[in-house]
Image 1 (cartoon, rainbow, N blue to C red):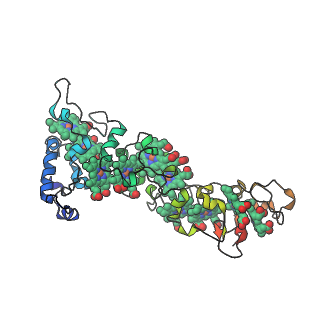
Image 2: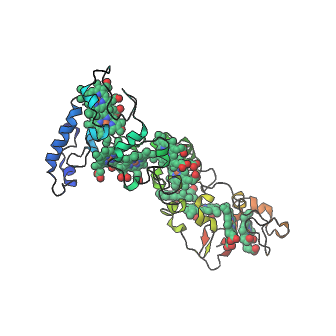
Length: 314
Ligand code: HEC
Ligand code: HEC
Ligand code: HEC
Ligand code: HEC
Ligand code: HEC
Ligand code: HEC
Ligand code: HEC
Ligand code: HEC
Ligand code: HEC
Ligand code: HEC
């Protein structure tokens, strides 16, 4: 096992200095490995799956008293250890995470094992979250017996999410996208996959607050605000990808006309949803439907701080 590299490395021990009243890291490590030996006497390097790679991960930092043993995750598994004379073959361990020799345990049992240690923090809203509600458990995203857990690395995280979310994968190949394929923006920059107090597993409480974490310049208060911007960026934008740049839900003027469906008037204002008044059209229809349409004049669509910036024109 030492050949695998990690368990007794001094750096690991240094980072995990024992708390008051705890025994020395060396003693912890020994006690911990002795516990694992209950299982590792059979499950060793000869396994087809790399079970002992666990020791190259944070779950294998043997100086740390909080470190799990095989049984903290798989359960005491007494029947598996001793065999059951009434059962043909070896009975399964208490908790099986992945289909192999045995059927996996149900999602709540699997997640429950991990949550004995990882309940708070980012996972405070796990219960009732969209993943928990739809039979997704921790190990549907996380891999424990591997030197690197793909989901924790920005370069490989999206691969894991895309195995289930094909629609979002397709979106990231459209003309206008967040640089998701390039690995610069990843799913977990906007979503908390463990559950959220906000909609759609947003990392912050609202979509807009989440967008502001990177697009802070769009945050008000501004002298002249455009109401739908403060409400929800997705009134106009789609986050994962669109064929209309920049990340627009539809093309202006149609996008604008979803809300501004009255006649455009000079002197006779045609605000949102006002009854169609055809008399006062100030601009020719062709100016509306070509190029940047409404944006030719209303160029500061997110709001303006210019004293002359009413009507979002500068
Ligand atoms: C932190 C929780 C955790 C600990 C500790 C743990 N396991 Fe696992 N085990 C899992 C999960 C999750 C899987 C599913 C595959 C994966 O994530 O790598 C698994 C899979 C397995 C498998 C099936 C191999 C496979 O990949 O299908 C075996 C055998 C196994 N564990 C044995 C052990 C032994 C022996 C130990 C102690 C050295 C141990 N486990 C410690 C969580 C754990
Ligand atoms: C006496 C030997 C022995 C001991 C001790 C033992 N196992 Fe097993 N384990 C087996 C055998 C045999 C299988 C059947 C699967 C196979 O053929 O690899 C198995 C299967 C498993 C599997 C499913 C692997 C898969 O590929 O689906 C897990 C998980 C597992 N054991 C965990 C544990 C844990 C955790 C412990 C300690 C509590 C433990 N085992 C102790 C012999 C043992
Ligand atoms: C007995 C307690 C315990 C159990 C059970 C447990 N873990 Fe952990 N886990 C830890 C500790 C301790 C760390 C290291 C924390 C640190 O370094 O701050 C950790 C770290 C992690 C990390 C971060 C790894 C990294 O490289 O940053 C992930 C992900 C994780 N655990 C997932 C799981 C999953 C999934 C399960 C269930 C299959 C599980 N844990 C079960 C104690 C546990
Ligand atoms: C839908 C995929 C997914 C599921 C399901 C999932 N995780 Fe995670 N987990 C992630 C991602 C992505 C990150 C990285 C988060 C980041 O970079 O902000 C992460 C990070 C972590 C971390 C390390 C960082 C931290 O928050 O402390 C731990 C520990 C962890 N998860 C435990 C769990 C446990 C326990 C469960 C089950 C209750 C679970 N995860 C279920 C995707 C998932
Ligand atoms: C094992 C399959 C699986 C994996 C892997 C997975 N998800 Fe999910 N996800 C689901 C299921 C099932 C649902 C609930 C049904 C639905 O809304 O599609 C869901 C729901 C969601 C939702 C909420 C949808 C809504 O309508 O509220 C978001 C956001 C999400 N997942 C993001 C992610 C992210 C980000 C990752 C990677 C970190 C990820 N998922 C990984 C299966 C998965
Ligand atoms: C820039 C922020 C951002 C990033 C990055 C991001 N999302 Fe989203 N996602 C959102 C917002 C906002 C919504 C809700 C609005 C919507 O449905 O368009 C959403 C909705 C979802 C939904 C629910 C779909 C639906 O139609 O309701 C899923 C599933 C999802 N995202 C998965 C992912 C996955 C997987 C990734 C990584 C490849 C990802 N997201 C990256 C912001 C983001
Ligand atoms: C993690 C940081 C991050 C978050 C969170 C984020 N963005 Fe972005 N956004 C970026 C980056 C990086 C770019 C690319 C900038 C560039 O290419 O110059 C970008 C570009 C954009 C663009 C312009 C796209 C183009 O084709 O020019 C729009 C529109 C946008 N984001 C909207 C949003 C919305 C809406 C949200 C919230 C749902 C959001 N962003 C959340 C980082 C983020
Ligand atoms: C009323 C519709 C609308 C809403 C709501 C909206 N945007 Fe935009 N956004 C646009 C349009 C139209 C453009 C293209 C402007 C152009 O081409 O001059 C744009 C461009 C962008 C750009 C790229 C150019 C730039 O200005 O930096 C980013 C980033 C952006 N929006 C972020 C956001 C964020 C973040 C929110 C929410 C706080 C938001 N948008 C809400 C319509 C909107
Ligand atoms: C989701 C609905 C919605 C969309 C889409 C939308 N707007 Fe608005 N817009 C509003 C609301 C609500 C107001 C505030 C009306 C009021 O104060 O009476 C407003 C106000 C305005 C104003 C007047 C600002 C002022 O200072 O009085 C202009 C100009 C405007 N929008 C242009 C646009 C353009 C151009 C687009 C397309 C890029 C657009 N809007 C898309 C809802 C929307
Ligand atoms: C040729 C320049 C120009 C174009 C193109 C243009 N507008 Fe305007 N718009 C203005 C001016 C100037 C005002 C100032 C108020 C006025 O004079 O009535 C205005 C005012 C507005 C107002 C607020 C006042 C009112 O009439 O309710 C809204 C909403 C608006 N425009 C929406 C749009 C939409 C939606 C489009 C695209 C379909 C558009 N505008 C295209 C120049 C333009």
